[in-house]
Image 1: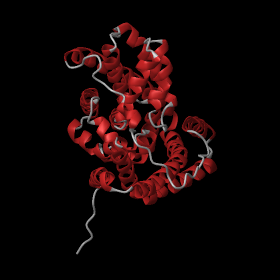
Image 2: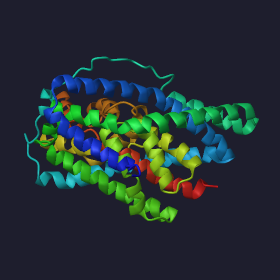
Image 3: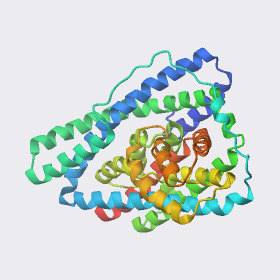
Image 4: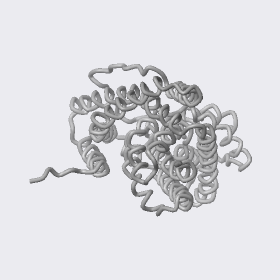
Length: 385
């Protein structure tokens, strides 16, 4: 019999289902064992992602030639506009919908009571540099190689890129479903799924629906620009969506997002350039999630937010989120100061927002990485040559 090969999409689905079921029956010692693998693999991801940027973005930049600068400005500009528009879209939709379904006291901070599991081994693998440092170094080396014709340096980075690709293909991608399984198992065993199904379900469900609607809008625009079926392209990105949903990190999903983007017909050079860059500057899903939750909390506390105030908040937050990738709930951490200084949130309101935001953290990063594929589609249409 021929060996049955399952697609990454099917493997991720199975991992999510098995992890959720196993968490309900697994003893604490087994969940801690899974947690140990989860922590070690997460450290490996944090180590490999900056190297991935150096190994893929640098060759992509000098491979693009003197058009790299224009492409960089285009991608960053589109990502910033998309992030801001996502927040405004969520704000307008939530402001219109929530008054009919929410009342003061509807949400509870049950997430604080969730059970925690400690790993048996907590090994720290420090990355050589952080993501922003890797990006800046890639831009500097890639652009300079175009003008100085550094063939030796190009050859080194080409070979280094192949090493990174082999590590991803032979180690990271095959182990990703197991990583997702351990993540879901811990989430189920700790009782966080019960929180999701509790009083915060209305807000969370609204955020999920809005994020999916925004993805449909993104791919409708990108499909029209690229001359491709938007729904087929969106379906091809589903493994990246599920992986982002499970891992809760935009930067950690770069290998899967890049692979899905190529399936949509995006050239390898453009995919290797756009996806790692967008993982740092395109946070559409996370700001939808934050905006939806902020509107709900403000409404229930009798402190509704005006459009002008929220626009000011979004224009600043879209810049601050650049420092958030690679950190679980990084956008939330980056926004805390602005919630209080711009929107006037009290510490109690911020704590309530954090409880709901963290109850189901995955759909924000899932929307982020899927939206990166839409930007890559549009950029490929103009910069493919």
